[in-house]
Amino acid sequence: MPSALRKIPFSVQILLGLVLGVALGFLARANDLSWLATTLDTVGGLFVQLLKLAVPPLVFTAIVVSVVSLRGVANAARLALRTLLWFGVTALIAVSVGIGVGLLTDPGRGVSLDTAAATAPKKAGSWTDFLTGIVPTNPVGAFVEGNVLQIVFLALVVGAAALLVGEAAEPFVTLNRSLLAIVQKALWWVIRLAPIGTLGLIGNAVASYGWDLLAPLAKFTTAVYVGCAIVLFVVYPLLLVAAGRLNPLRFFAGAWPAIELAFVSRSSVGTMPVTQRSVERLGVPREYAAFAVPFGATTKMDGCAAVYPALAAIFVAQVFGVDLGVTDYLLIAFVSVVGSAATAGLTGAIVMLTLTLSTLGLPLAGAGLLLAIDPILDMVRTATNVAGQALVPTIVAAREGTLDRAAYDSAGSRELTDADEADRPVRQDQPVPAPA
Image 1 (tube, rainbow, N blue to C red):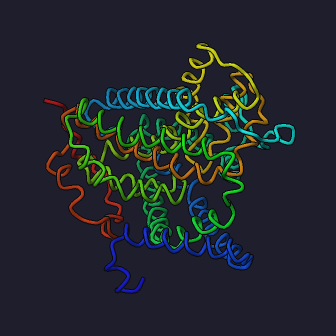
Image 2: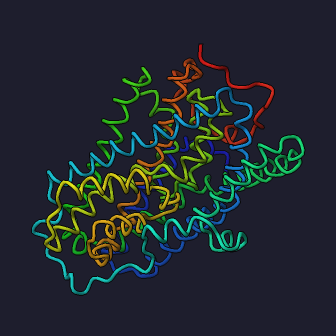
Image 3: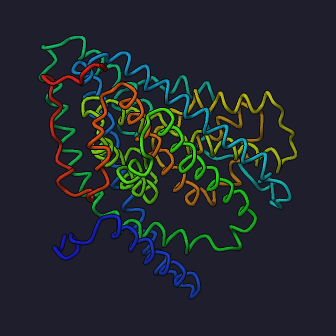
């Protein structure tokens, strides 16, 4: 990367890519420049493809290492349990926000769409598919197909086994640490291309989705952005203050590089290295962050699995003239809290949406009505996901008394740079101190 460009803060580079992408997208659409639209699509597609390429090895090695790293964490079982508890609590609050915004805005009322032409998406979800799909029939196939949920299952089993085997498994653990460092290094090179990827992704979105396409779904799109914004900028700050006695502005200053990258990349897993660096800079002990962040990147989805499916279910019900009752809203909350792993940290939330629709007995074709604008919705959903993935370990560490508050207060004082990418090994001789 040219030295002059390195002097520009990474967040400014992404902003410049965003602005230039919007401008080129409008230019391509206004002048019907198909070659420009195709170029933008190719650039953005290549960026996302590079992120996806790193997902299988990144998820497996990160989770194996994170599970084994728990041996260096005092009260590891309690920390893991409290992390899961906060995952559930924040998901329940997020889905409540989604339902509330849906009831207030009625996003499907008065919408004129050709429901007869709507078809169910090819990739649908059901409880049976979800439960049976967790266990792979072929471990190699899980990596070849990029089935993140199955890779997570394999990594958890292998990591737990390595943890229990102890010293005999140390060469295997060392190999995984080395592979993780290599994958993160390669992924960091991809992340440095985020400004160019942003230009292509945003430019293609603007060139592809004109007002004629967005107008019928403008109300729903606005509702999704408002719901996610409430979770991001109202719920999370309140939780930081009430549960962690932390300054929310400091949190966003430290976590913003990850939130920003998540918005443009639309991949929680692809953003995971930046999320973990951000969480560590916020003062969360590295040994605990090494467990909480990879686990959260594959299971903690407040945007994709809580706010969005709640609003989408209300939208589909209203478009198809189906009245939802209290029991239906409780089912939406249940699916969001229990089934969020179905989204598995990849771009898109179609599986989670179809899982919700099938649970409520709503037509799966309703999901097809929203496919056209899914990339636009996915940006804010993924940003919300990643913010929640950084929030929970920060709150848990604060409540356990292990958060470095001096580091937290200074987290936003410098840009995330290449120096933050260097993978420092988790030291087993320095366990996280128990709370006083």
